[in-house]
Amino acid sequence: MSQARNSPPIDHSTGPAPALPDAAALARLTARLDRPVVMVGLMGVGKSTVGKRLSQCLNTPFVDADDEVVKAAQMSIPEIFDRFGEDFFRDGERRVIARLIEENAGRPAVIATGGGAFADDETRALILDRAIAVWLYADLDTLVARVGRKNTRPLLTGRNPREVLGELMEKRGPAYAQAPIRVISDAGPQSNGVARIIAALEDYLA
Ligand code: S3P
Image 1 (cartoon, rainbow, N blue to C red):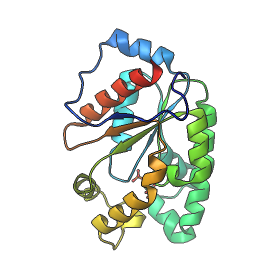
Image 2: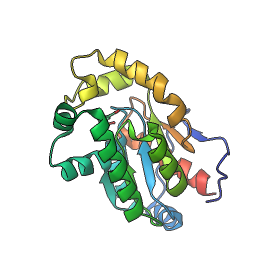
Image 3: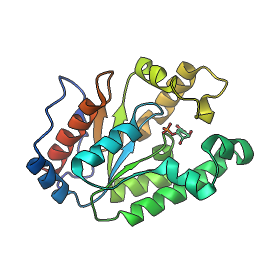
């Protein structure tokens, strides 16, 4: 990796989204990726959707850590929280992400994580060491609008999403800010987010 650990983050958040490079340039970028790209950021920001599209553009495997937790526990996330509590979920999440990082070590892949994963000290240290973390972020209005479409998030159940997301934004912001790449996921098409990540990865590997 040519970007030193303590360099300022590469920030692709202003101005119009760049165009997607052509297939040959994308293939060259993928060939230079010697570790997985890990999507981090708050609930509703689009880590899974954007991450999946990114993996299609880069022609790499894609895996969603939340889906893997569900598979391992054979229970939905609301059910895990309900029956065993958040700490139990976090333990499972930590183990699953460690496994996914191990399975994808040294090769290009895209891993989407749940919103709390990168706030966990151990998981964050592992991702920073063995992967390229991309913090996908959006303003509160965009997040509230996006989470409104899904009812599968126990941290939001029975609470005001704006309040919870505002609190989490403040609490987790310093952790997310440790990602070497940050990209805005604004109200435009998700392909904008993908194009911005690709441009940021090009800069990161330059
Ligand atoms: C959580 C986010 C969720 C899921 C769980 C907890 C969080 O994932 O892991 O409900 O703590 O922010 P998404 O970010 O994919 O919604």
